[in-house]
Length: 487
Ligand code: NDP
View 1 (cartoon, helix red, strand yellow):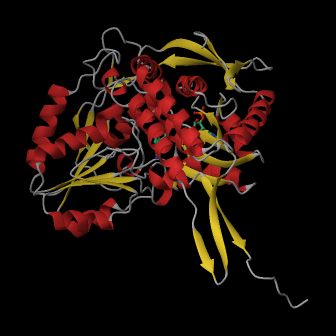
View 2 (tube, protein in one colour; view 1 turned 90 degrees about the vertical axis):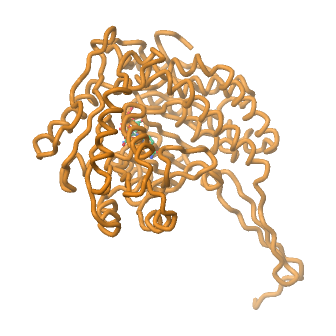
View 3 (cartoon, helix red, strand yellow; view 1 turned 135 degrees about the horizontal axis):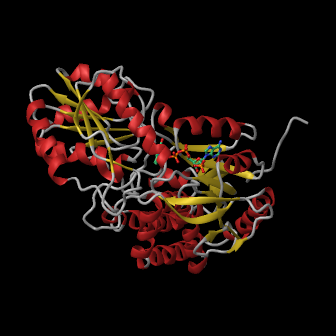
C-alpha cells in the first residue's frame, strides 16, 4: 500500500482515479495529516461494480468447503499481522493500543473464521408433497455493498465481508472517510489468502460516493453501520431499487443497577460502557440508572476509580486506556453536549474538559466525564453523544426504571446488574433492545446475533442470522406424476 497516497482497491490492485480528487486523513491524537486518499470517481465506481460482478460469477460457484478454506487462510493472515494492523487502527482512530492489540483484529478474524466454518453446513430442505416434492436452496444475493463507521474500521469491514463472502456474494466496501485504511488492508489480505479478484473491492470517499452505489441497480443489498440519520437516508435511497438492507445504527442504551447488584462489578460495567474506546461504541450504556438504595456507594466507588484508573494519553502508549476522539469536529460536538448538560441543570461530577496530554497537545482528547442529577428530558439523556460522557440517574421501582429505560427512539442495547435471577430475566424480557447483557456489558462474540430494536437498526449481523441475511431462498417444486390441467 502506498504510504502517503491510498487509492481505491479494485480487482486485486490499487487503481488510479481519473478526476484527481483527494482528501486527507488526520491522526486524531496529533491533529497531523498522515496520508491522502483518492476519492472514487464515477469511472472507478463503475469499474468496482463490473469487477464485483465478475468476482461474484467465480466465487458463487466456488464450493463452500473451498470458500471456507480460503476464509480460514485470511483469518490466519490477520492474526499473524495482528500487531501491525492494530497499530494502523490506533493511528487512524485514536483508540488505545491496549484495546486494538487485543480486540480489533482478533474479533475481525473471529468473524471470518466463524462464517468460514458455517458456510459448508448451509443446507436446504426437502419435503414430499404427495408423490411430488420440493426442495430449497440458500443462494447468495449477488454484489453487496458494505458501508462502515469510523470507530472499528477493520472489524466492521471483517464482520460484513465475512458473512457476505461465506454465503458466496461479492462485496464492495466503503469505509468512513476518516478511517479508510482498515478495509483496504483487509482487501489485500483476502487476495493474499486466495479470494478471487473482484470478490472484495474497496472504494473510498464520502457519503456521495456511498450514495452512488446505494442507488446503483447492480447492487443487491446494502449493509450500513452508522448513525440513525444516515440509516434513514440510505434506506430511502435503497428503496428506489428495493434493495435488501441491514442497518446497524446508533443508541442511547440503559444500564440498570439494582440494589442487590455487586456494586464493584456494576461500576466496572458503567466504566466499560462509557469510557471504552473513549465512549465511541454504539452499544454504550450511557444512561446509567442506579437504585436509590445503592446510589451513594456506587457513586463513591465510580468517582474514585475514574480519578485513579483512567489514563488519558498517547494512544500508542500501552498504559493509555482512554484515547483521542475521531476528529476536531466530533470533539466539539462532545464538548457541546457537556455544555448542554451543565446548562440543563445536571451536576458535573467529574471531568467535562478537553485534555492536552504530553506529546499529543494538538489531539482531540476529552477526559472521562460523569454527570449526576440528570432528568429524562435533558439532551444528554435523549441524544447519542458518542464520547466518554456518562449520565447517572436514580430510580425507586422496577416498573419505573423499565418505563424510563424504554422511553427512547433507540433500542440497540441494554444491561442490568442484579443477583436476583428471576428479576434479571423478568426485567430483560421487558427492555426494548436487541443486544442485552445480564451482569456483563459490551461483550459481542461473533456467535451472537447483534442489531437494534426501534430506530437503532434493521436486521442482524453475526450469528447464523447474519449468514442468512446474505442469502435468498429458492424453492424448487418437482413434479413426479404426469401433469394434468383444465386446458
Ligand atoms: P455516519 O452515519 O456519519 O457514517 C457512516 C458511514 O456512512 C460512513 O462511511 C459515511 O461516509 C457513510 N455515509 C454518510 N452518508 C451517506 C449516504 N447518504 N449514503 C451512503 N453512505 C453514507 O456514522 P459515523 O461514521 O459517524 O459513525 C458513528 C455512528 O455509527 C454512531 O451513531 C454509532 O452509534 C454508529 N455505529 C453503530 C454500530 C452498530 O453496530 N449498531 C457500530 C458502530 C457504530 P463518510 O463518513 O465518509 O461521510
